[in-house]
Amino acid sequence: MWAVTRYDDVMYVLKNPQLFSSQGFRMATNPPWLGGNPFSESMLTMDPPQHGRLRTLVARAFGASAMARLEPRVRAFARQAVAELPLGQSVDLMPSYALRIPAYVIGDLMGIDPSMHSRLKRWADLITGGVTTVKPDEEDRKQLARDAVKELRQSFGELVERRRSEPGEDLVSDLVRARVEGEALSTDEIIAFMSLLLVGGIETVVNLLAFSLLVLVEHPELLPRLRADRSLIPSFLEEVLRFEPPAQSGPRVTTQDVELGGVRLPKGTPLLVMIGSACHDDAYFPDGDRFDMGRPTPQNLPFGHGVHFCLGAQLARMEGRLALEAMLDRVGRMERGSEPIIWHRTLVVRGMATLPLVLHPA
Ligand code: HEM
Image 1 (cartoon, rainbow, N blue to C red):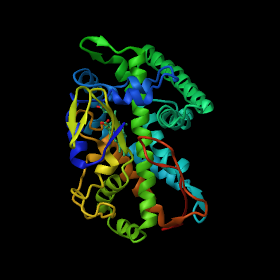
Image 2: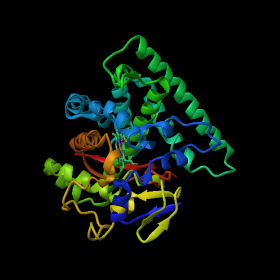
Image 3: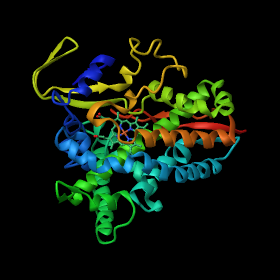
């Protein structure tokens, strides 16, 4: 597999899906031992024109008016999650904050019962990182991933059938009602969409929320500035996204012999487009390894580019802003807890499994 690391080369790959196919995702996330993965069948792994037909279907659910409707609910939930955090003692912010908020949002969007929200992140982990980082002899981990696919298919399949008989005002009901060139989507196609939203909407935002806090701990001068001037929050978040892009890379595969960055790649070569690296390319981001809220924003590359540009970019930015505002309302200072941070082992999404911090009242 080739790693594409310079900004210009990353952009070239993302702008040319006819040369660099997103089927690379399928190769990476559906190895033969898994026996199928709904995430690997989603539009993220498709190329034009098949991809575009499906994308127009869901795009409406993420437009400006849908976001405006969602905003008060996300704000209220973020406040509730932050209000329940203990102050003055070490607490793992991953389950209690970084994960809780996006799991609620995606669950709410899809009309999933809140009692199931805690399972969503586990499935999202297992059908992505739980597949791509398994070594050939790790039979236990393979079984965990197979079990997750089975549970997810069953649970989402039941939800789709319920919405077919009793449609409501949620995304799954919209997908049941939707028609692509006159034809309804099959249950498997809807499950694939739901799996994509699960991974796209939870895995990434969890890490945006967590990295926002880690940056604040490592740069203690920033928290009082953000508290004093909330209008700085969007630039802060853009720089967090550039500095620590939650989606570090995307797999692609060449559709023909092609030259890239002076390297000849034969047809069928697997590539990993390193968004994380491109976001630190000094040619575009001078002194890129320095956190600098004053950089021109937004950068957008953390959300990809071209036909697969992130459908949830506005939602992610909104969640990042509302979660941080809720935190700043209640917390005046934060520091690392005594336990070490544990990092996830994944190929695509970089992030923490635990983030122990001590929060002090405002
Ligand atoms: C900080 C948060 C997020 C980051 C960094 C992020 C990043 C990305 C990136 C880099 C891609 C393009 C992948 C590629 O070209 O191979 C993408 C696609 C996508 N994202 Fe996001 N994402 C975030 C949040 C979300 C949210 C909240 C949702 C939805 C609820 C979402 C849904 C999607 C979908 C559906 C796609 C596939 C679009 C397509 O194939 O046309 N993402 N995201």
